[in-house]
Image 1 (cartoon, rainbow, N blue to C red):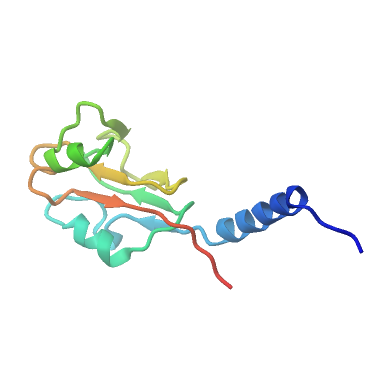
Image 2 (cartoon, rainbow, N blue to C red):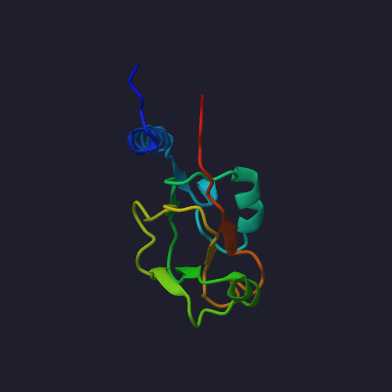
Length: 136
């Protein structure tokens, strides 16, 4: 009888798991047909379109003067503090096919627009927590 050790089985398991997760990745337009625009509640949209899965891609489509930032933490998200935020897409990037953001890991992603009152009104901001997608 041949024994298969953990060191041989684990890489095979990771390979199979990666293939399953990659096959399930989706491309999701933020806001659906509404795109990324003022006056639309993206927190509500996010909750209605959850769960998001690791390796899903969010697509931001919008017109100037809006933009997309990735905020570093919950405090920045709540306060709409863009000081340490990362600009994902400038005011010129949202046209055409939009800007793609891959949800590559299981962590909190905080998104917001810094234009005018977009964030402070609570509308043009949302968070996503991608999870593993396993199907039997």
